[in-house]
Amino acid sequence: MSSGSEGVRVWWLFDVDDVLYDATLLKRMARENAVVAMIEAGLPADFEVLLRKVNKVVEERGEDYTRHFDDAISALGLRVDARVIAAGVIAYHDTKRAFLRPLPKVFKTLLTLRDRGYGLGLSSPGSPVKEWEKVIRLGLHHFFERAWVGQPDPERHRSALEELGVNPANCIYVTARPEGVDSASEFGMKTVRVRRGKSASKDSATAPDIEVVSVWEIAGRAESLLEG
Image: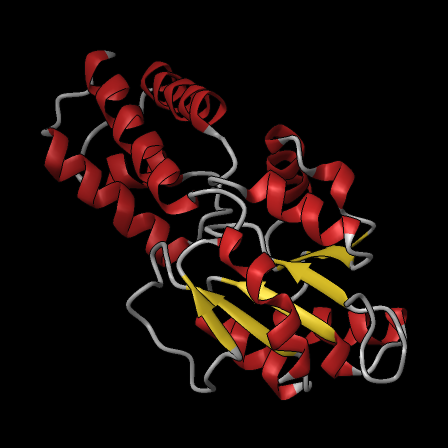
């Protein structure tokens, strides 16, 4: 069933992190390897202490901040050495490139939805270049016809509905973020919550239409979601 109650095309909009790939696990591995690399490059710090400090800076300054390692080292009262920082950056990005892979059956799920005639789009609040880099490295970029990336949830959802010209009930947002569920619900969109990643234990204020652990589950529930 590729059309809604008004006979128009139904669109599935996908968030990126912890939906298309395991972002939480990958980032944790990358930070751990970066800390190891910086210590091996001569930084006189304890692994656990430095890792906690890096994670704290990420939490406070956001993931798109570019000086996580510098700030963490400074906060420990240590000298910021360009050689040490470079070692950490290289280890971080090498880990991401080596282990960035789609979650199980994501490719098959997107292919199934596309073959049924659904429209597929990206909708993420992340940095546009970084989000597209992830999706391209995942090998999934050819699936998505449209994209709304970089703006806060309300702005993206409003733009998507206006540009697609569809009834909100014919637009489904798939996300692992509870705040993403709440925003999409406010616009009347249907929502799928992927209960995994760093926000897995947090509930949205508005209950999602369906909740899954992995994206592959939605292909078998698409019909009932649209009819509900």
